[in-house]
Length: 518
Image (cartoon, rainbow, N blue to C red):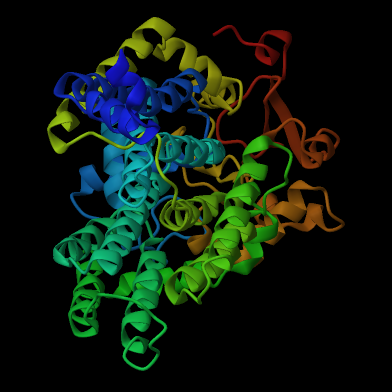
């Protein structure tokens, strides 16, 4: 006892630290961290599975395109799905995603679409955590940062191709931040491969190229601006950047993919008309979470004591895109994770203690937990089909096919994607903005809103079949329009045929057609 009492506090601390870092204590801490990571990877995926969002109208046109590609054994060069676009040039830049979701739906039904979203979210969560932990030694801080970032993306938890963009963007930022910090450039050679894949699933690969241009500009300026600290050789990064540009051309459309990207990016009109393109409404906690991440990254850069060229310009670029459109909030969230994790240096109370050998256990455990949640939550195709029928004109389309009604079809912008899939007839308009353009979208929106000249819309006048949401002003106006007969109505959709011009004899509206049994 006398020996212990003579020891000073520093000696006692050294002894306690040595005990804590004993092999047994370290193994215990490592497996505890594995459990925490599995929970972090699994919980967002489990919540996503519970939400099971499959009523997104756009995924249906992607599946129809995937079917077309498999049937024709080629990617479309002209639009085969709308009356306006028939014969006009059209490039489907998400062709690989189209095939993927079509096959998932063919093999597993709508559960396949849920599985795609859940798996994508789990991979994005893992990538975000890797980005954070490679620059932040505090285990708990990296976990909290990752979990908060994933929460901010909750509005994007639908089966869309943007999951590939989010994942590839995170990987790109991770690779660039690590190379700039350490000078180890081996991972940079993965970027051309990433861009070759990226350009075949989503057009937003151009955002990744712009980020690469910022990094290249920084490495060049570092030779004249001594305040810039970067360890990447500009010549090497320039060669890799050129390889990325060429890699993106490894798609069915070649260099024309850049022409398509310009066409899509130069359509500002849709920003104020399509909900997902509008700015955040700040009606949910996730919106304020995005703001908090942006402010946190700004504060970290402000207290850095010197101008951080790449990080500052990257954050400005990310804030502009993310606060301009809600669908792009992942940009500022990812950039903020990178800046905050690298800029906050504390003495970690919980140091990250895992090595690569634990990765298989983490992946396997996460997969098992998410699979078990599917089973326990009872996710099934019947319930998912009911969810779709409550949002989209499923029953109206069944009536149209049962009665053999034929087009030309006049429909609204929101349902065009689903109507491309079923009843698989040419639509008047759909969500492919690079086909229809701002002017046509504006005109369609005005007609369905019952604007002054709605009755003179030439596409409405030439239509034999009209399918639209019962809540729209145009449906209310057509009820009293002698040119059209209402032949079907339920809580979601109404169906009209042109008076005395329908190619198939249709019975008058009756009680049983208003609420058909499913």
